Structures are given as C-alpha cells and as structure tokens.
Length: 290
Image 1: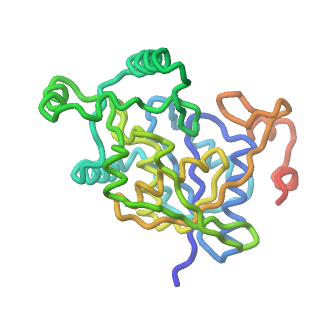
Image 2: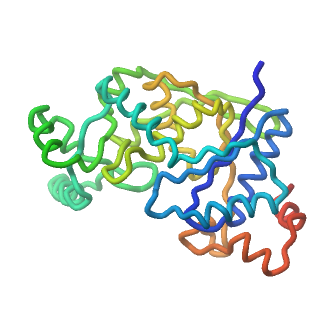
C-alpha cells in the first residue's frame, strides 16, 4: 500500500493567520497519525493578487511553527499547461460551453426573471445567484464567431452534459480524526453551470485543485468547512477527467469575537503580528489544541 498523502495549500495573497495555522497543523498531525506524507502547495493562479513576498512569508511562518514539508513545493503558476490540458479534455467531451455574459448581464437577466415570477432566484452554496443559462444553447456558429472576435468571458460546466457524462450518484469518503469513515453523496447540481475557466486566468480554483491533487497523489484532503460544498463540484470534475477521488475531512473554522471566520479580507491578525506581540510557536500550538 502507498503511504497516505496530505497537503496544505495556501494562497500567497496576504499573511497567514491562526486559521491557516490550524489547518496546516491539522494536516501535519493527520500525516503523523496515519504514517503519511505532508506536502505544501502554493496556490497562486491569481497572478494579479499573489505576491512573492507573501509566498516567502508562508515558508517563514510555517517553519516558525515547526512544520516541515517535502520538496520541491508545487507552485500552481508554474503549471498552467496542466490545467489547459485538463480543460481541453473537458471541452473535447462536450462538458463545457463558452459564456459571454458579464456580471451585469447576469444580474439584469436574473432581475427580469425574478420580476416575472415573483420568486427569489436560486443561489449556489456560496450565496451567488445560479447562472441563468443564457449562453448554454447558443449555436456553435455564433459562439465560434464571438470567440474569433475575442475570448469568451468564461467557460462553464454544462450541467446537463455532466449528468450524461458522469451519471450519478457520485460519492466520496469522509473521514474523521478517530479514523471513522462514511460515504457521502455529492450534489454538484446545486452549483449550477459553474465557471471552470476564466477569461483572465486559464483555469479556476476548482479545476486547478482537482488536477493538482491527482498529479501529486493526494489521498486525503483536509480543509475548512467553508470548502465542504466545493467538494461536490470537485468530485464531479474528478469523474469527468477520470481522476481518483481522495478522502475528505472538513474541519471547523476559527472565528473572531464577532463570530465571523478569520480571513485575510477582514484583516484578521496575522501570525507575524502575533509573533511581534511575543507569541511563541508552542503557545500557538497550545492555543489551537496541538
């Protein structure tokens, strides 16, 4: 049997905070418990927001916590060719279609439909309105002319095609810290026709993370509950691309005094700031339950 493989995969678009520290330490703890491997991956597909100094800080913060990981570290920005190849496979199978709608176009269409029906338009697990399918039935000739005139705004998964190409039910294994496991049925249709490739970036979080997990042989994914619903979409992509499905564990989130999850966008106190205040790695570990 191969060793279990775990990974911690932060984005270098800000400094790590206690929530990141908990996830990293939990992954390393699982790897130790299961006699497995621990990898670090830098998820920097968003080249407009990710910065070298934040990547360097990730290595510094994790080493300060006492973590060690295998080398070399996979940086997503070095592997766009892998994601393009996966996208081309989805395209070849007829699982995606080009979408030329802007956010304003989508909002206006939904507003009209809500006014006509008197009902609130359905949302995806992130709270965003489901795509109304405006471009799904666009004739190939028209889509081709628009692509020739300028790249599409995005490429979306075709929900109907996906149902045909990856007939359900799609399932994955969920595991707990005590070793217990159970089977979970994925519900990718609640995401609607999700964006899988963006105009400005030749991939998406969903596509790149699925490709990376397969290429790196990740067997166990440990991440926050805020990404639990995304697993439905990832299991679908794994089926469409004939990739293995890891086991998943979604841990609880650390909250601030107002009850919101810690986040870079909320300027949650960083590990660097805690260090400046005198915190030690041992104190951080005790605070997080390790």
